[in-house]
Length: 236
Image 1 (cartoon, rainbow, N blue to C red):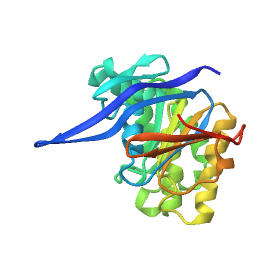
Image 2: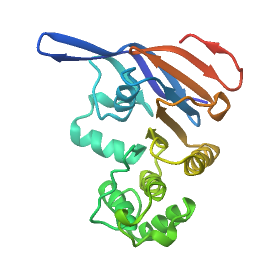
Image 3: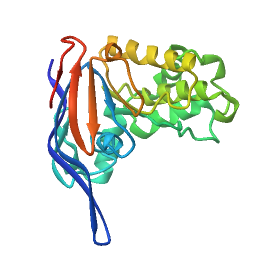
Image 4: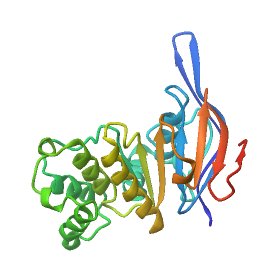
């Protein structure tokens, strides 16, 4: 498998007044196409910063972030927004569905922004995605009419609207009960089986056998990267 994501000597520092805080320090990371990755760490470890750099939401202070062969931080904001909409689906912790649009309209809007899906195929694709996450019967409801788990499923469907190669999820099960969380994890595993690259960021303990690799962060550095296939933990 080829690398779909590469971080080379990535540093992200923030300056407030006379104080500088380094959120990520010299990160070296490669993620292959089709991997199911967990990025794990306590609050302040740098995991959300890493996600923001991979998605182009934030920019590195130094180093290079290459995603699907593109040095994404060389793109201007307009180019980056289009690139992100086409190539990466983002599932936010608090869903961030537009409350004044129905669930299916949320998905259709994501397609309209990028325009990679032909207009005459969008409605059926949106329905197919909602069926995949088992909430097609809620298509014409507003987000407030859905439970937290149903909203998370809707957010996953929206993230997949433009058939991105990469799906990233920030604490996707943190606000869900265990049964609903397991169903969301099952959706992610199915996407990986279909060839998607899925990256889950979480502060929670995760089972080593749930993911292809578990990358642990502490104080802005990768302290371990354990692969399911080998069962061995190595420093990265």
